[in-house]
Structures are given as structure tokens and as C-alpha cells.
Length: 189
Image 1 (cartoon, rainbow, N blue to C red):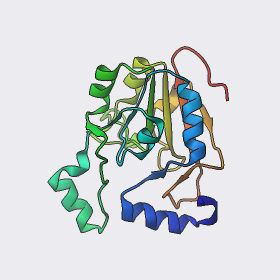
Image 2 (cartoon, rainbow, N blue to C red):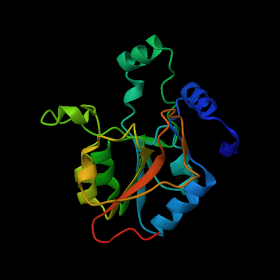
Image 3 (cartoon, helix red, strand yellow):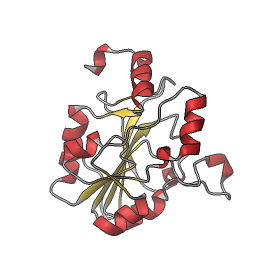
């Protein structure tokens, strides 16, 4: 279905719905094969559709429910994320402590801002992805090459795939990707 849409159509749909990436059947099949019976969670789940499709816990700090943030989004005419009923209010660290997953999946999450690396951007409420990588066997991040170009974890050993069946609301001309950091073994696809 997404093959027949333009980047601008995906952008409009994503903005109107408060959705950043689109969970295709192919993405779900890929992630199921990566999980392969292990304990998995999704952090930054937003609407929770991907976690629901994978039958795994959905967690999010639900920061877009904050009245000030909602007002900021309202001023630019952008809806906030419609958090799903299945999305548990937990930041990434708390979610990992609670579920002790082998696999952590994240789509379009913002990394934690580090004042020592201001050029990398991020958010003070962002995810400490380096600590997640150390806390699980496999961290799978789905994002966009330009939007997520400055993540500090790019310095850590990882593998990156750019399958044709990944779609997002990005209109910057760069590719969507799946990047995997594995604590004990390399990615084999």
C-alpha cells in the first residue's frame, strides 16, 4: 500500500495522525524473526500499534500529554501522538527495569541530550540509548538517516539495514533504516 503513496502523502497522513513511522507487515515479520521467542518490549511506543502487532509490552513516557508541550504543538498546528490504550506510562529505563527484556525495540525515539556533545542534539527527556544497549541483548532502532544522523550510539558497533519496505513521514530524501546493536553477537539477516 505505501509503495503507491508519495512522501508528501505519507507526511500529511503521519502529521495528522501523530504518527512518525508506519508499521508494515514486512517490518512486523522482520521484528518477529529478530525477537524469536525472546522477551521483548517497545519503548517510545506512541500509538502502540507496532507493539500490539508483535504482542509485546508497549511503553512510553507519554511526554506529549504534557499541557505545555501540547500547547507548543498546537501553535504549529501539529497534533500530538495519540497514545494507545495498551501503552504503559514508563520511560525507557523504568521499562527495562520492569520487564528485563532481551530485545528492546524503538522507533523514532529521541536520544538524551548530553551537554558535553551539544552538536548531537537530543532532548533532556530523551532516551539514554547507550545504557539500553548495555541492559539488553539486542537494541533495534527504526528511524530515518537524516533525522537520526547525530545519535551518539552511532559510535558503538552496530549493523544497519535499509529495506525498501520501511516507510515514515520524513520528506528529506534520505532512507529509512533498521539499526541493531547486539551485546553478544552480530546481526545476521
